[in-house]
Amino acid sequence: MNPLRQQVMETTAHINPRLNSAVDIGFLTGTGLSQTLSSLKVIWEIDYADLPNFPRTTVESHRGKLVYGSLSGKSILVFQGRFHLYEGYTPRQVTFPIRLMQELKIKTLILNNAAGGINLNFSAGEVMLIRDHINLTGHNPLVGAEEPAWGIRFPDMTRVYDKGLGTLALKAAADNDIILREGLYAGLLGPSLETPAETRFLKAIGGDAVGFSTIMEAIAGVQAGMKILGLSLITNINNPDAPEETTLEAVVETAQNAAEKMNRLLCDVISLI
View (cartoon, one colour):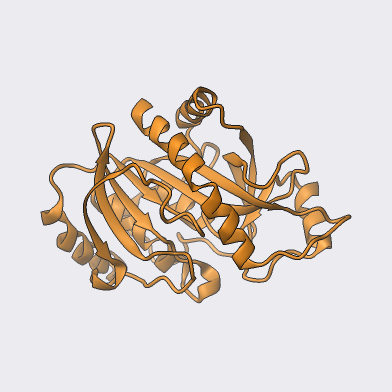
């Protein structure tokens, strides 16, 4: 057993006795979206700092708590805040929550993030269903010593985001009169934002939204055999011909303003799963 898996199993042993039953869904939140699933009936919560071996969130707006609760008859673990490569974490540290979910035998994974819009048909505050992604980070969480217990070394990536979950998300959006865009997410290393030339490049290769997260977790989730639903909250529009300055504060504000919409969407999706 490699050292990382040993650490994950120690964390799993810390959490397992606190669970009432098998966990149905794991949910990892993005920038400004820690409070997204506000309708969750909370059973308990733990600070990341109180979990053995668990990384710490260093980015403002990532709450840094693990919350266990129920919604629509399903048990859910919500990771309020994620880790990023640009914080100096390794890809394997970034995916520690995914490996923890894997050891807890969670089979359904929901990922959301705050992203910049590249598709000029999108508007700030809208949600995009991630249909596919492009990994432009230069990193991969599967690099290094193989851990056979976590899956095959060369997982197929032709169906990262589950079509069935995507269909449920579209139905939930229609039922709630929520505009749900669909598109391709481009993942960069960050933390500097894109130049106009970089935005043109991302648009040319098919990108509809861009951000600094999600890719590592999705890759690990695929290897773990999870069904994945990915949702991006579009916080701003990147128009390379009319660029506007963007700040983290503005991104967080837009994400927080859309939290109620995201909550309604996710509540209905979870009820349909």
